[in-house]
Every structure is written in structure tokens, then in C-alpha cells.
Image (tube, rainbow, N blue to C red):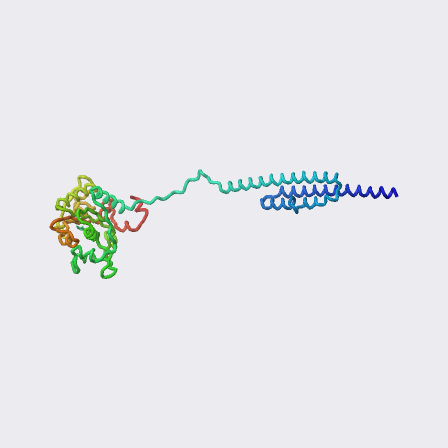
Length: 361
Ligand code: DAH
């Protein structure tokens, strides 16, 4: 009986120690497999799952510890201590791993986003000012310096402003040389900048001192000296006591500024329907000083603009009394001036936009 009794107790004692040992082994097993998985882990998401798998509320360690009720208080204490130290170890390992992964990710990012500051920069192509704009600005500035203001007008004009008001009625021969693109019977692409004179005189009472640069259009076919689109600069001065002397003085000053102080000009009588008297102004060829060369076609002089005293009829058309006021006007072609300035022999170059040409200015 005693024998059996002892045997029974011996079994319990043995059973309990077996149970403790098994739990300790299982805890160590969990520790080893968790430690191995953590050490192999390379990804933050995966690391979080490992934490849940081993240390979570329903994780392997917690599930195992739920069986601690089977143990004696002494055993429970030992198993509990082991479990806590394993938990701490694994938590440390997880934290360490998390730091390492974050560091590795940061280094990867820095490596992939590395900029080589010693590489040469991308060349930035800066455009140039077109030769036409360059000389246009220069001419505008000369006149601004003489107290003129700049006024722009519409490129689509009415027959009235482009012709009628400038004393060019229907069937006037001047219309032949200024054939243009008609939008309808009334609207057309302006053939000259002179209509701006009319628009200004209608709105503004004298004194008037304006220039008007802009594009004009004619039904010309393209060749080295003609283009259906080109540029003019128009000038107009209206005040009391304006005479031909003012016209000549102003234009001579302009030429001095554009071509140099010793340039020479001459005025030849001409006809324009909107000025009376009218003239064309020539500049002595600055290449041969009047001796004749290929630039001036052996003439020694180069024609640069048309001008004259504003026709009394035109003043009257705009409501300005020609008995009180008088004025002068002029108009020049920009392309011609620029071609002579840079010795360009083909006008088409201006409009072809070839950078080899444009980058020379
Ligand atoms: N509009 C003229 C033309 O295109 C140029 C011109 C000549 C304008 C004399 C003027 C001027 O203002 O007075 O041929």
C-alpha cells in the first residue's frame, strides 16, 4: 500500500517535473525559431507579422504560457522567469532588426537617389533677339529719345483707313502697287502703317508726335527682295508751324543716330497721295561713301524712306484744321534697313528661322 502510495506520488512529482521541462524546452524552441526567423527577416511588414506570431496575445509564447496552470507555484515561477527573459530577448531582437532594416532602406534610398554633383550641367539654349526686332528696337529708341511715343494699329484694316482717308480713292493708281489680301469688300490686311496716322489724328488733337512700327502685307510673290509680309515704321508730327525744315532736321538727326554723325542724306521729290510736297530720302552709301559699290548698286546712295508734309485734305479728313495746324510724316521699310546694316542679300532669311542664320546676331 505504502509502495503504491509512494509510487503514485513519485509519478506526480515525475509528471510535474516532466511538464516543466517540456514547457521550458518548448519556450526555448519558440525562442530559437523566432530568433532565426527574425535574423533572416528583411522586410518591416514581415517583422511585424513575426512579432504577432510569437509575442502577440494569441502568439505562440502566450498560448504556451496558458498551460502554466498545470504547474506548481515553484515551477510556474521558473517557467515564468524563463518566458519573460525570452520575451525580452525576442523584443530586443525585433527592435534591433527593425533599426537595421530601416537603416538599410535609408542607405538603399540614398544610394539610388545619389546625384553626381561633378557631372557637367545641361546646356541651356538661350535664344537671340531677331535682327529685325533688334534694329526695330534701336529705331524706336532713337525716336523715343526725340520725344515720340509709340502707337500700334490693327493689322486687319478697313479700306477707309488704309486707302480712302489717306487720299487714295478707289481706282487711284497707288492701289495697283499696294494690292493686298482682301477679307471682304471692306476689310483687308493693311498694306502700310500710314492708316495709324489717321487713327491717331481722329482721336488726338495736336501736338502729335508718334511712330508706329508694325507688320504690313502686300500681294507680292517671294524672292530675295520681296515678301508678302514685311515691316514698316511710320512717323507723324502735327503741330502749329511745322515746316519742311522740321521734317529734314528730324530725319537727319535720326540718320546720324542710326548710321553715325557724318552720314549724308539727300531728299528727292516724289509723290505720295497723303503728303504734299512729298520726297524720298536717300542716305549716302556707308560702304563706298558715295563712290558706287555692290551694296548701293553702283548708285552711291541708298533710299531708306518716304516722307512729306501731311496733305491738307488728310488733316481735314481727321477733323484737324489745316489753316491752323501742319505736320510731316514719314514711312520706312525695316527689312531694307536691316539688310543694308548687316549686308544680308536675301530677305527670305529673316523669315526662315534657321538658327545658323539667327545666331549670328
Ligand atoms: N506708306 C508709304 C508706303 O508704304 C510710305 C510713306 C511715305 C509713309 C510717305 C509716309 C509718308 O507717312 O509720308 O510706301
